Length: 222
Length: 222
DNA sequence: CACTTAAACGGAGGCGCCTCCGTTTACTAG
DNA sequence: CTAGTAAACGGAGGCGCCTCCGTTTAAGTG
Image 1: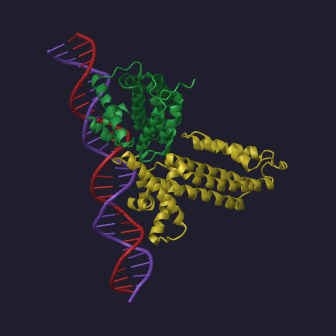
Image 2: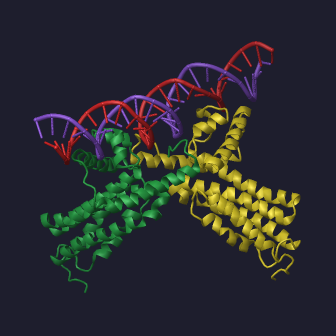
Image 3: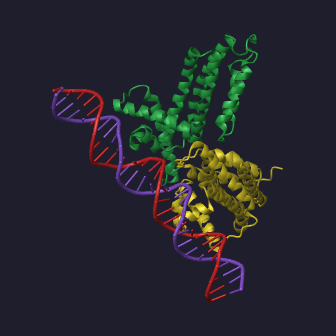
């Protein structure tokens, strides 16, 4: 972890302190803090670049590289995100929100089966971030368990919307619901974290979609 | 973790490779590899210093510091222990062995209740290492699950020996067995990893010993 | 506008990680 | 005892982490 000279005890309290900061920061983030224009700009840019960097290189990517690519000093990055975990968490939340928003947007723009398929592809990226986040938070996951559980709720909600639409207009078979699909996707998030994981997951989505399209038009199971 | 430039994929395979090395190294460690005299010396010295350093500063201590204190170059440390985890694991095993050996040695040297108490104090250090190791191995723990389970077996075995001796000569109460004691000690290893943990654990041992001595001479429960 | 000032910036500095490779040294064969 | 050699050594170098603090700048104020 590179905390270096810090002793064990001080390390622990350090982590706890930082985590406590997260929680409170999270709470008053919504209310009283209008950032200065440049600060807001830099922060947004950092999150954007970080999201791309994490997706491409994993959460262990160099923070200095992210700052550099965002065109800000490393100090700026650390002021906005006091630890790597803070940054990862923000990216994760953004990813989850994007995924939920995408459900509606894709439904409006594509045929319902294509929307579902595309959404699943994005789901893969989301899971990748989630894994990274889990690895990054390590032992602290328990402390942040709500983070995972409540975003998970919202995400599966948005899947439901897509599945039901596709079933309704007969582009996929009618004898499945969102829970079935999620179950079928479990291979994605429970598969071991190997280098080929992403490709494997993409194939799984293809396979699953073929299965869903086969027998399209079947009457709903209920 | 400071893997820096290494991308996500290469990071994963890197870890896997190193871990694979551990396993195989572990296997042929017993058989065909007589180290050169100086190598053996340096290795032993590193483990010794590392054990002290981990105990004092936790597993996140600087490896360069350990190498320095051992009077060897950082390169030497890394040749013997390709990752921090390797070193921690060796220290952990050593600790566990020491703990088992101590049981016999303490039993021979001290009154049986004092032996038990002293052993518990050392148990605290052992658990501290175990925690550090767990944190250090992170996600990889599953891969090394045997490491924990089988040392655990041996350790609880050595506790049994002490408890039975103390019960037999009447220095502690007779209506408990090793499993009861282990159960009472659970506060030590399941307590949260706070800065005061060690002190708290020491008090627990004191408390437990008082309880055990109270009513000494009681007939064995069976 | 000009001025003020708190907020934001950013990079140098000090430390640790890990690798790579030229140098040293323990063993062995003669 | 000597020479040869594989093994072991160790530290420089390049990178990343994070902090600290002098400098810049956005945003109120008259």
